[in-house]
Every structure is written in C-alpha cells, then in structure tokens.
Length: 314
Ligand SMILES: O=C(O)CCC(=O)C(=O)O
Ligand SMILES: [Fe+2]
Image (tube, rainbow, N blue to C red; front, top):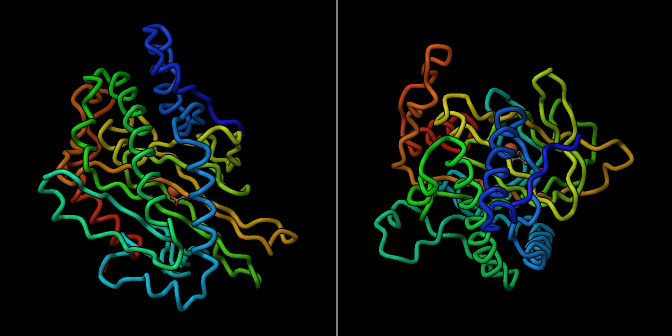
C-alpha cells in the first residue's frame, strides 16, 4: 500500500501556503494512517549508504566478536543485542532479529548527560561510530522539523517540542534479520507492536516485509520509494494527543520460502524526548467526546514500563 506521501521541502520552503499545506497533510495522515513517506527528508543519500555499509560489515562479524559489544545491565539500550532476546509486548516468542543501538551524545553542559550510558565503540568496523554519530544528528534534525509541523497542527507553538528533544533519549537502531534456516514455529521477524517513542524515522528497509494494521483490521505491506523515508507516530505522541494521532500497529513478516536465504536490514531512528517531558494529554485534545484516556506520566516513567514489557529490562 502506498502510505500518504509528503514533501518536507514544502515545510521548509519559506512559502506560508506550502508550509500550511504540509502541516495539514501530515496531521491528517497521522490521524488516519499513522504512517507517511517523506521525500526531501534532509538525510544525505551518501550518509545512508555509508550507514548500511558499516551495519552490514558489523553484522557479518563472527558471533563471538559481536558478543563483546553486548553489555549486561544496559537493557539493550546501547551496543549489541544478540538473536532471540527481544519479544513484542504480549508475545512470548522472541523476534527473529539481532540489533545494535546507539544513543545520545551530549556535547554541551546539560546535566541530562549523567542519565545516559556511553555508546559502545565498535573497534572492529572503522568509521562505524563516526558514521552513527553523523546519522544520529541528521535524523534529529529531520525529526525536529517534522515535530515542528506536528506542533503547528496541534495548535501549539511551532517550537513546542524543540527543548524536549534537545539532548533527548533517542535511539538509532540497526537491525539484522538473518536468513531463515528452518521452519519458524510461531516467530516472525518482528511481531506486531507499536513504537514507544514520539515518532520513528525509518530509512529504506532493504527488503519487503513491513506491514501495518489498517483501521479495517487488515495487514497491508508498506511500500516507499528509494528517495523517501517512512515516518510513523509512536505511543508517546499518541498518548500526548489523547489518541488524536495514531500509533499504528506494525510488524515485519517472514519472506516467501524462496527468499529465506536472504538477510533483511533496517535502521529505524526512535525519536524520544528527555525523560522529564510530561506526556499528560494536551488539554486541546480532551473534550466531552474524547475524555482523557491516559493517566499522567513522564516520558522516562513510560519508557521504563515499556522496556520491562518487552523483556529488555528486568
Ligand atoms: O524492520 C523494520 O522495517 C521495522 C522495524 C520496527 O518496526 C521496529 O524495530 O520497531
Ligand atoms: Fe516498530
């Protein structure tokens, strides 16, 4: 299915009409589908190509080498998480994936620095860390612009999210779904779930498989063009907007048998605010027909609860 497409260059054009049209398109798409394809997203093609190159080199390392980057006690939030560790909320079968997570680098005097573990430095793939750092900043920048549009759609100040996401707890996650070697019992590459964060930016997954659950309760494959990135609403934004913007359920299915021998790679950027941000439902999203659906919580409290549910935090 072609999800709604938007052009971020419209928002940044300086033309008030184009800008407003972008805000309306994005907001409407997030009320209806929860997913959009964004062109002119601002992440350089070369950077995306480098990122994929180093990610593939990393996952091709011997298991023993990768395990050196799996650090106990970090709940998978930094470094490597080996195959079969994470399961979706409400599912017992672990997903058929391994992944590497890279987090915030605080380079000013923000005291939030003490809340974040250091990134795990991958010595075996030269340029891995510098490329992840560059990509992290590029995703933050595109994400900030998209959240500015969302703020306007919600009738908030355009810069409402800026201070909350500056030095936010975002995660750049590189995922490898290895070739499937035997009939999987019940597990699929990524079981159905909703993302935890505000929004997720996903660069061109290397193969088909991503599906979303429509309002009609049907699974449909997400397709996007090579020059687009997919950006979806996560539970934190759904919660803040009292269900106005939809955190749509999605999954990654196994390929047809003749494709079992192939790997799939994808690199989502989970955009999180700082832990102190309140996710209390916005007053403007509450009325008689939309009573407040969630208790107040901070982003930090909510994240903690969710990491326990998916088996990453004990
Ligand atoms: O691999 C993909 O295309 C999507 C992965 C995903 O939904 C996730 O990690 O939250
Ligand atoms: Fe997801």
